Image 1 (tube, helix red, strand yellow):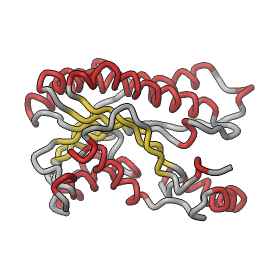
Image 2 (spheres, helix red, strand yellow; image 1 turned 180 degrees about the vertical axis):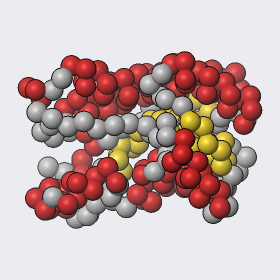
Image 3 (cartoon, one colour; image 1 turned 45 degrees about the horizontal axis):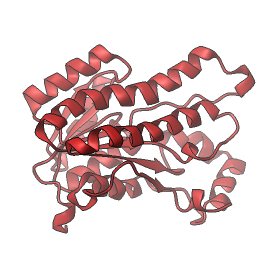
Length: 254
């Protein structure tokens, strides 16, 4: 691997990484040389994933905490920094999707979407950034979505939350870039994940995704890893406040 993309000696915390895109990014970061700290709320699933990744040769730790609880976040990050090691790279990937007709969408569900995506991204980043600022360097990668800039029926709350994450990313760059940090975001398109199995099984929706995406297919989860490695690496040292779309051209066409 080219030296500009080498993450040897770096430690990366990836939230929501016991499966899916989070695990794919963690695997890619580990392949680039980083020590990875996996996160999820389910300790059993998290431990099994960590064991599998370690068996493949990665240096991996498991850190179970709830990104929506400030106390849980504060305690977990303090434990990581003191017992595991300094966090050089943070990937804010944890998230949920609750679809429904907007006119019937419950306020508490809308608030949950904002709490899980926006508030949690801020809370984890704030806790991690304190150590990064003290050390004068660090990479934060927030995960957005194609729905950051476009909309779909029944997904407005998710899109609103992800759009907020995109502008929070720019705000973090405004505040923390002068202190040595790089804060960027990745906006994935439609990927073959467990969470999308129902959509993929719907012939009408599947055909729509394949026809709407210029590459005429869904993304493979491994195809998100390169973007994470790039933004976490020295190759991206002069990139800040940027949202990188990894979507097969979905948002580039009408």
